[in-house]
Image 1 (cartoon, helix red, strand yellow):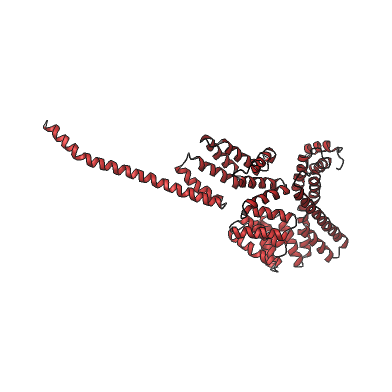
Image 2 (spheres, rainbow, N blue to C red):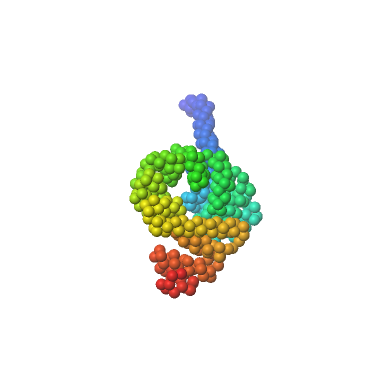
Length: 432
């Protein structure tokens, strides 16, 4: 009994200490878990902030941190899906949507997200009526819908639809940076350059780190022969995007525009070594060589540029001048006529686009005419898409079938050419 009593005494002495140790352990564990929870919440707040500013790379980094603590949080997976989709990574977006399905996110939310992914890729034929219906009902995610549709319409060259979406976006959010860029882009196509410039300038004011907005601004300034203003924009882009070919080409054009011809030549030589067949580089090399009096080099580069991009008006005009200076007037006249053809086609295209933004409905004949003009200019991708758009609106439009038959015949797509020849009533071997 004495032994038992001593054991009870020992137990009684240790119980308070043991209870204290357990309590301390629980407090430590709670503190550890609480710290992790706080850490995740801070990343979640940061993700929402960067998402609001369209910094999708930072948003993804914060969401990855969140998912380490909240691997089964539906809202985190949904925001991740939207972030990846808006950045263009549709595979990762779909992976997060599958997690959302497992976590019982509302089915209508997932249906909308998948429709937006299709729209963004230009696959609008399946989802456009559904998305327009959501807009008509003033869906809470109308901004996301307009963004995705704008991207799809740009891919499919449906410029009047891009105009509609951009206008709607800016009515809802006047400081929507991407909406301003899309709005400015349409205005450029309509030759309303000063208005486009204001849109781009405002976009850059709102977000100085949006490189695409700044590139659009810089290139429009160049096209308006304001190389001195464009130079600062391209220098800013070079600091942020060192080695970017488009930025280097823009800088070279600026240097030529402000009289720093040798600097332009050095930049272009490096670009030509990196991208030997790039028509924009060849065109600029030819124009620089012409300014330096190197007529043979100029002629060679300009002819190469035009063989790759027949719609390059500046290259055609420079080649005309180059041949005139060599006394080769008959050959020069050929390129002078090409300049006139480009000018006439561009003028008519602008008229077509202006008319289409006014009517905002189906216009297969206008789309067909635009497609044929683009093919005539040598802009095959645009020409093909415009003709396909015309046939989407009127599957029996003969001129569109004939135009596509000729295009596919020329590019070696014989099966497609044969089908469109049949639909357009063109005999095999006959020129549409």
